[in-house]
Length: 391
Image (cartoon, rainbow, N blue to C red; front, top):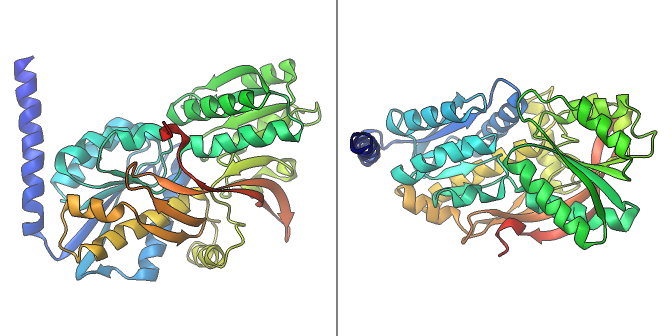
């Protein structure tokens, strides 16, 4: 045991030492290590965030406060062991100033101890479990949390004809958050949760779960699945004729992902979701963002992952400007806290205490506009903090 502790201590000491030498070795560059799932089940997340990060750089230049910005993209296949290895390589070998990305919660958590030990800011652009920012004092989040968007649906559904629900979530951190916070709010508003179903994160088969829902005959099915899996749920929901059986689908916005929505077909029309971003958000800032994103990526529509990457790059750029290019990890972190700005999603700010994002949450319905499917906003809850940290 003592030998193992000595080895771990030596490794962490080496990591800290490498960081202290970093600025002296290449002070003209500012390196951002972007760790994303570029292949595998969550590949759409990686593609969206990388595309948005590169768009931000194209629009705002690759030199900030005298530093040349270098973006180093690594594929972790959404596997925590790979994430941890890549984070260590980026910090020790590449001597990055910031690590960012993190498509799923286990990946963000795997990198957190390295961020703490090396005092490297970790900007989480996707992963959405509430507790992530508590895993390291160096984590800042530019995406969202599942409690933020789940509570809104727990308020809306009982007021709109939904008295009984079955929940269906991916069985990991965000899914557990979505289930917990939706259920608590739905029941508080007088609704009945008939059953709670959890689907494996890896290679999920929704068919037996959806058949069980059909047999239970609730008013609605509440769904959370990670970005990229929504089309499969929608397809199987419709194949089983659940809509025709009078079971409504309500969900967090991951399910009607803008990146996949047109592929779901007209069966998705009328599905109501709660989320923090839609490509159809009517603000001038968003219209410019969508136009620029699609011009740079002709076969893609930006989704909520893209806006998390775009805003994450803004948080990094503005922190570098605020420190006049001189700040180390602690100074950069301090400059990230409290940032207030107009995002394509609407007004946001980084809460200085929690290092989490505060933002508007929208209720949306899938509608057809100009021959395409969009999540059209019809209501908004302003300035939503993460309910998971409310206590």
